[in-house]
Length: 151
Image 1 (cartoon, rainbow, N blue to C red):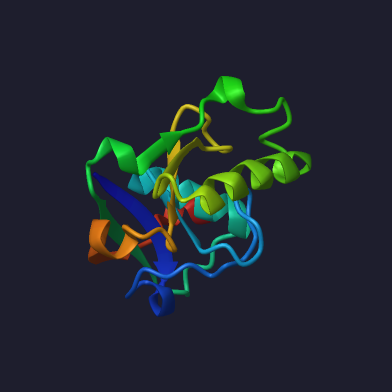
Image 2: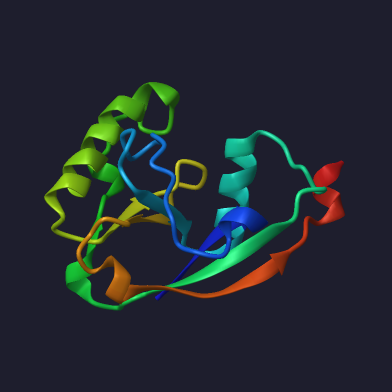
């Protein structure tokens, strides 16, 4: 399976997580956030950055994940708290993510996107024992911002 991550040039050459707390992980947990499509990855970046800076060069990272069912766990919409798409839902989701991360049972957590709930993000546990064998950066593609997004 291929997933996608939009990154600046400095962070597009290797698979590395920052360890910064986010919606599904706590500070210090090495989780790579990827999208199920290039378009979802683009929209997620725009939402999280709150603006576009076309002067900064971006690259789309195309990442290959092994197609082995035991590597994946999916979080279903029905299992999420009512406030999961809001900032007030972060604590609950971070706790869910921390349990997944620490258990090391699966390498990938498939979660609904808070931006488009019927599309999915794929969180990759960079500390999982299978990470180096089952996750590969296939290529990086130069990325451009459509000028219509700037209006």
